[in-house]
Length: 102
Image (cartoon, rainbow, N blue to C red; front, side, top):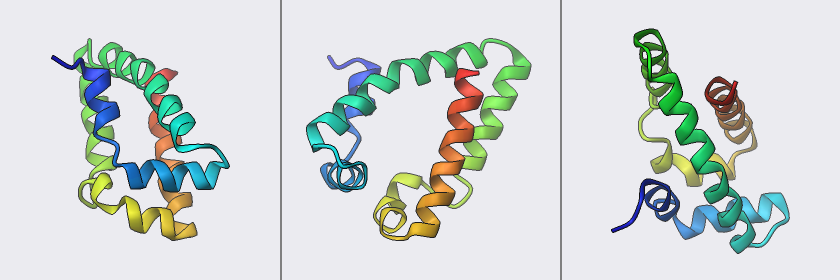
């Protein structure tokens, strides 16, 4: 049975990994490994944030913000192809990571 980190890693489509790898100048294998390595810290941050009612409310607000335009994974191809969309998406992701990791 896969664990939560493996499930997150497996949910990343190969074309997303390939496009991200190309943007980063890395191999797809190294890019997948980096994203997989980040997952435990982000999940731990979400768990810690959600451990209080205030934190859980803030976490829910972050999820609502991230999904305001639908599932971001459904839009990943368009986001990676458009520099402006990519910049906005990366900025939103940075804010989310900063909120989770402190």
